[in-house]
Length: 215
Image 1 (cartoon, rainbow, N blue to C red):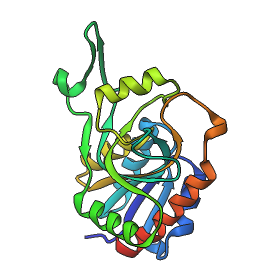
Image 2: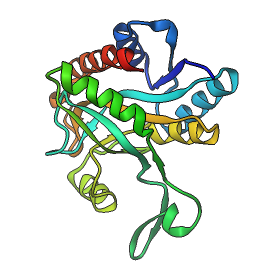
Image 3: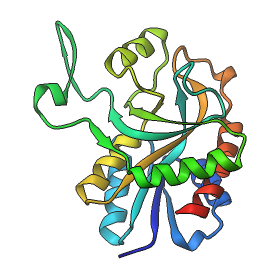
Image 4: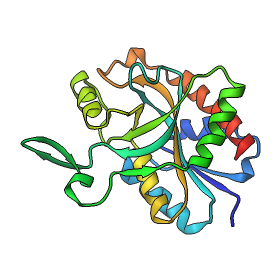
């Protein structure tokens, strides 16, 4: 069995932030697969078809739901959920799970979660949370949309655009998966002036340093 880990980001800035933190880079293959679930799924599937990995991690920056994950925090997924995969009906949104067309949820690998959580909690001042991370094809830019997402998935901690795509590809290939997000902005009204991308990228580097000590 391979000992290598595949880490999939969306963009080069995230890939570099992760590689800057890895202490044994030869144990990892870090790629920037593009923005959105489709690009992420395609890049992940291509990598898994070419090589063998013991774990897939989708990592990057993302939005945090207020009161759950604040700017600069780290969120480790317990579930990876495509929040907008389903149908609009007169009674409201219905997920593919409710419609019987498949599933919009992938459970993250519990052993990897516990290892990373323990390492981060004992060796860094950065707040770390565990909970569901939702995937959307369009990032949230209004309070109304944020409220709707929490009605669909009340337990959500963070939002990204790639997690479910990566998770779907990994699940199809029977490889364990999880998602890690450093929070750069709040899920809600779009306000670029309030974003903290450099700080979130630094938190991602810190998480990668600890990740490479335990995985």
